[in-house]
Image (tube, rainbow, N blue to C red; front, side, top):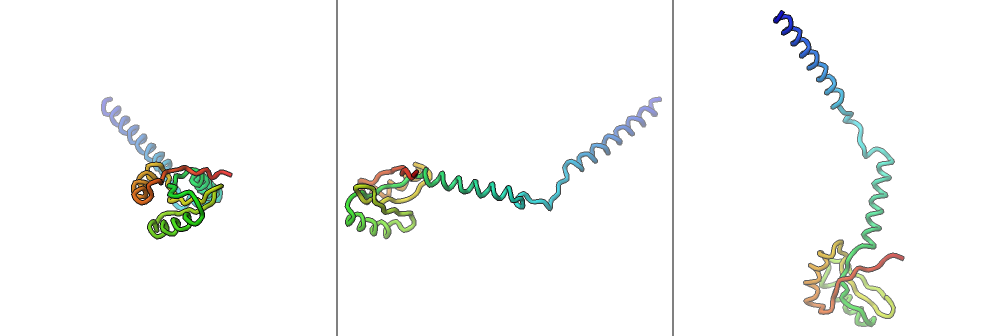
Length: 135
């Protein structure tokens, strides 16, 4: 009787082992030929996400204002800033009643503060601002 029960136990154990192995094989197998990037809805979603991030960045960045005043002085400062800070974004615009020169487009205030340390050595009155670009 003991041998019969042992053989029965082995056959049940073998059956369950094979059963779970087949289930695991079917569940864990995936179609490797399918790519998520091929779906046009996914591509459209990615494009919308990029546009939303760009719009957010355009209205939520920090800049360093180096000058605000007359056109002649702003123009000469603009030329100086272009030569000195070649790798940074430089903005020259008119906002009633002054012409303004701004430097950089920083995602965080910490990045702007790091740059301000260097810029304030040349422009003592430079300061960080967060422009309001919403129209």
